[in-house]
Image (cartoon, rainbow, N blue to C red; front, side, top):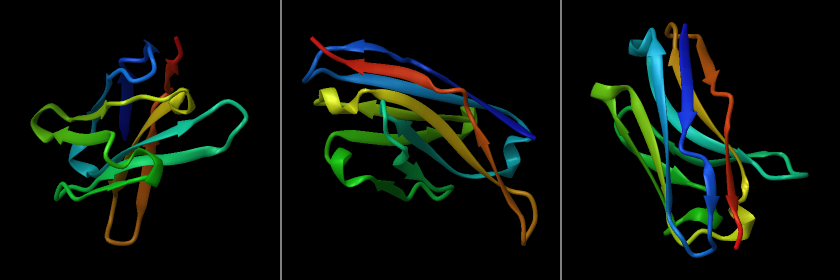
Length: 120
């Protein structure tokens, strides 16, 4: 259906900024909302930010004011700009796309994840 591939992981110093990208391919016309999730070491995967097809955004409380999600529908790409990074932001970040297959059926596409390490 749809494949999503993240890029941009790396090592960042505390207080620094970093950006992630996620490109979707395949039946991209099925995509409605897109989002970023993360799994920190020893923790469950959690929602970081989402953006709907109408570009309504939502954020997990701990990243509000620091992270910004955006999308470029022409490029089938969603971005996550992360500012004022903290060591607790260290995690594998996953891209997610919600596919509207029919009026009653939605599916999700997940990327393989990209590792962000915030450390001095």
